[in-house]
Amino acid sequence: MDNRLPLTRRSFLHRGAVTGVALGSASAIAGCATSGGGGNKSVGHKSVTSNNPFGVKADAPLAVDVFKGGDGDAFARYDVTMYQAKFPKAQVAYRADPGIEAILQKAFVQGKPPDVGPTTSDFINLIADHQVTDLAGLLDAPAFDTPDKTVRQTLLPHTVETGTYDKATYVLNYNSEVFGNWYSKPLFDKHGWEYPKTWDEMIALCATIKKAGVAPWTFQGKYPGYTLSPILTMAAKAGGPEVLTSIDSLEPNAWKADSVISAATAFQEIVTKKYILPGSAGLTHTQSQLYWTQGKAAFIPCGSWLENEMSTITPKGFGMVLGPTPSLSSSDKMPFEAIQAGPAGGWIVPAQAANKYGGYEFLRIMLSRKASTEYSKLTHSLTTVQGYADELSISSGFDSSRDAIRVAGANAVTWRFGAWYPQLETAVENATGELMAGRIDAGQWATRCQKGADAIAKDSSVKKYTD
Image 1: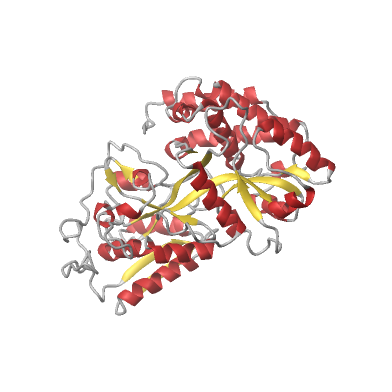
Image 2: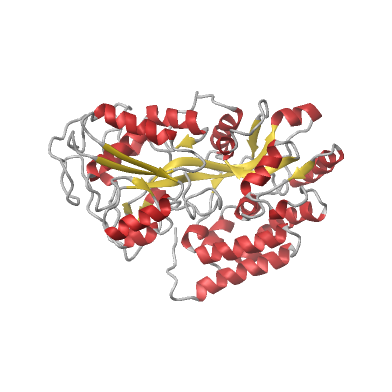
């Protein structure tokens, strides 16, 4: 789900609720237990049954807000139909908007938030201000369509942790996202090209691709976070995941670690050797992705939403698939299959919701196998529900994303500094843009990134976070 500013996929690393943070100023907000006790005032909540674990009043109105972005909103409208099938007397006020960020912020200020909706860019402040409800009751309720399991037990590893702050779970991350380098398998099959597993193989393949009259790479130049992703993933493969921990922890010289500079140097190489589609540094996400689907470039870095985002203009038979970022060398600490992946796309139930328990039930429905399957069919993306997609074949992009996560297993990496320190993320992305435009080298890039990290580390007014 799109939880960036303003709740879009335009800047991949603005993840909204991507990781658990110790929020010293936020206390645990009393949530709903399956027995019906506790929590803020809300309509209903008396007739608790196994089929209605929150005691939702049958005719209580429900307000649902949805971000209408790369995933569209058809999946949420489907969830509404499931909710109304269960509560036919309930009127659902449904609002889907690309600008839902501003709408939600205004609603919170007015004290009239929806009963359930996406996280906003200031969700940490909302938690600290006691504006978001603890979801423990939801997590411990019976799963909607998985017998003998709680909702918590049906979720992929780390889903709960990535929504937990100060020991309470305020955010439900619905998307299981994966990031890698995309290519057209039919194009590669046509030319006999094999996806490279090492960077040396990548450089050799780039030379071959260029001779065939195709630009080896393009990228979303206006949004440098897309290219930062394979750089940091490659650094983690080479130096181990502790490289990312050091960066998140604002450690001195973390950005100047050998593996980090080596990864940046690798991407500098495709710039200096002119293996990038001319003009890419000035392209938006949709422009670069359009050129890629037109076969003007072989590789593009992006997340698993790419297929759905470009579905209306991708040529039939294009056959896009995702590949892991190549290893720097055979001495990497992590295997080639290691990939950036994790829960994203947060949903919350506001503390001032008029029908908070209906909000819980809506999320319980979203987390069903039935709703997850429909979501994947509509968006070509995965949810954080375990197992439902194991035998689900939808498209080349979806299938390759699912398989990449499955093969990576425990070798999935992510980082958190972007969500914790937006100022640092801006500095790093600006430096990455300069690197990919050929205006600075890898060493200068690392110096700029480290300067941004040091400024945050020394600023006592900035709250510091840890795993």
